[in-house]
Image 1: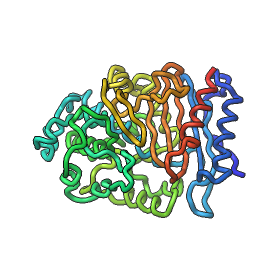
Image 2: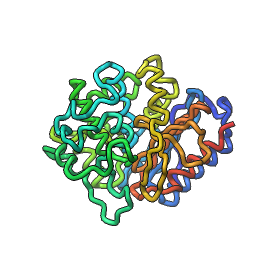
Image 3: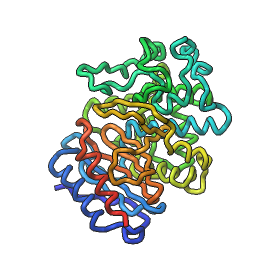
Image 4: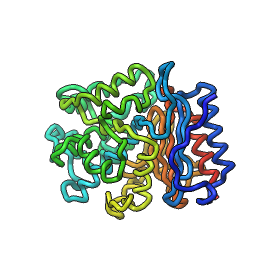
Length: 375
């Protein structure tokens, strides 16, 4: 039976009007997932009114038999939550007057200067409405094409743009990690820094996210979560040697910790500031976390909507569960979550080491328990 390891907190649950009984129920739920070998490891952090009151983890750091325990401050990939970080980088450049939201991508990347692609704007990429290829399996196609393999090769841009658009720009929401790769390329081209360096210099360091990286330092590999031999191999390869011919890993490449990811969420909850550093203006932070679409349909992974909501990088939560009505969020493969509820001043972060398909026992039920503890 696995035991919890506790990380740093600022308060007890009673100090922030949160039920201790519900906190214990949440811990027991995650513990059962680990003890029954449903998942390799699990960790979660919750904060209210800027104070962390729950921060714990259990299970194993790696897939190997002699693995150490998964500790609260260990590093793990957050996959698609990276899109929030990329959107933050883009909006910093917008605030600096270097980019503008409706700017055609073709004014920065010449491959977009075609009759088919020239109307795609930065806003379209940020809101998954560019019409570029949706992620593999998005339409529940029985034999998905793994077009992500194109992103590591020289000439990847032309390969991404090959073939027709799936829809006209702005007309349909189709979840598109490729679009965020292009946003990462834009960051590199207009900032004068490689995307990876821009994140480190302009976002992670200012927010005190000292254990957040695209390229993990080799000395921290023993503190990094790996879920399979192939997973360990590609994380280490991407960290040790930068491939300048590859698409920036701006749709899924960030590695971080529970507490560092909390800092990002709290920064938005604070209106763009954290620890006396202003990352974004209040107006920009508020813009990014509210719906940007109107009457835009979506069909994805078996779900359809005639009017799908989407922030800038951030998702706008809309499944009718018990989270607050203004909650914004993002999830990531492997699996992890960052949810921010401005009405309750509540931040919920989860990291689960699991290579299986999306599972409501891992992604939905714990979150429902978490919100039920708010008093």
